[in-house]
Image 1: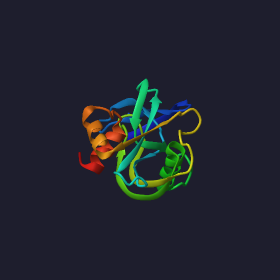
Image 2: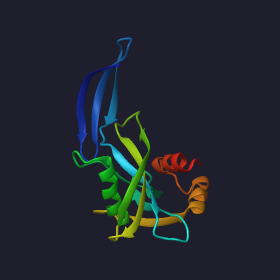
Image 3: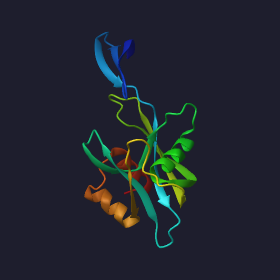
Length: 177
């Protein structure tokens, strides 16, 4: 595949390039690609409650779904040179209001939708215990914090409570459900 021409056709919240490509048979065709920064998300375990394991999720309105979605805390890697581990710590503070005790592991990397977007997502497993702010996001995010134990989380996975790809991939990969 050869990229023979590229032009920016949208430079707003989304950046979209129009590509003219040539395949191995010499035929040309066009595609549009969303040029998106990489992103991070996290399975967040609350360790300060001794009665049982609790996991934290966000609930926020998403324009693509035209609905509120319950999902893993997530954000775009939009600070030049910032390591992904620092980015997820920042997002957890902004959205959940918790200081991150540890970023335990990288669970999985994947392309969000490689047919039309350059965005790659990294899923981390993190532990938190100390609430240091209200959370709720920045700007107009208006994020609600959802807390679940493992049984509720697994039930939610199978009942369709979660319908966001990064959340389903993260839960399936981490909990092997």
